Image (cartoon, rainbow, N blue to C red; front, side, top):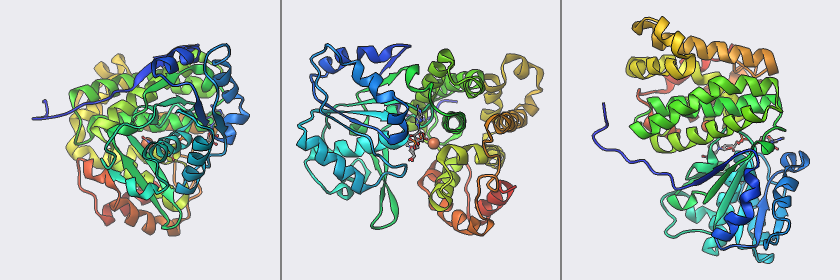
Length: 394
Ligand SMILES: NC(=O)c1ccc[n+]([C@@H]2O[C@H](COP(=O)([O-])OP(=O)(O)OC[C@H]3O[C@@H](n4cnc5c(N)ncnc54)[C@H](O)[C@@H]3O)[C@@H](O)[C@H]2O)c1
Ligand SMILES: [Fe+2]
């Protein structure tokens, strides 16, 4: 059934292919910019990935404005301010984020400061505070997970108040996302698995959350099929360029889906677990996905049954009685996690992820306050969250 009203929006140009980065000089020229600041982190720089980006500029009219390669995992307003200064001192005119969700979100926040000529990031936190277009931001993702290259969201820590600030605005959309498998062949197996499970969660929550619509469904279903066929392949063989490109596309499709349909319970539990116990986002997604899906089944059964087609394949779908398909989808999610555990020790439980049992109450309290719950199809209170955390514990 169609929603009585819905919106779907995504303005990001996608350039995808084995040598997609080679088009960068043309793309920058189209955007009328010639002095980019590259924002990345140490892991990405040490993997030699920045060199691939800069060598794409050789013999072009583009002059590199600078490289900032020290973005930490939980990027803060302080880091953002430091990078904004580098941008201004070096007279840059655009930003290129090269990395996973951390450098990408950082670049979005730097763009706010340099475009608004401000050093007070806090002023722009929240929904729709930005009023005008920012400088062009180009994103080259090096993990296939967050989908931040096509979302209008940035999350940045405010160390002064010990909170994570969220920024959402149409002006935060990057202008271009470049999906080039050379940028993900170096992602280690466990990070590949965790970030891939983040993408799977985006796609699966997109199909079940309250703002779902036919367009976000189409993007999500395509993403799930690509993840089914490629995630385990690239965890086994990171050098598989076809598989890496397929996963980069899957993460991107899932990102476009969830930034319209929104996400729910898996993300609220995961955000809280990340904040309290510092479990990486993708690992937390993988741990909670089957339990949260079981919990939501009373409202989502038909949609979860539909997921069996892209996730299980046509034989599995037709061979399973209609009344069993939703349960079968959840069984297959558990089997998928088991394979990833055997291949690269991706944790299946909170205990395996190193979460102390004493932290469950604090996590439950934070989870019920998380904004993602607004879009979950079933209400969740503190005792429900505790029930789910205990189920996911061991
Ligand atoms: N804005 C959004 O829409 C959105 C959505 C989901 C998550 N996020 C944010 O994204 C962040 C998580 O991002 P992530 O999961 O991509 O991880 P990440 O960016 O923190 O990277 C994880 C680690 O992998 C390394 N790495 C990344 N790519 C590599 C490569 N190709 N080769 C070798 N090493 C590589 C990095 O150096 C880092 O050490 C969180 O802060 C989360 O809040 C944002
Ligand atoms: Fe996520």
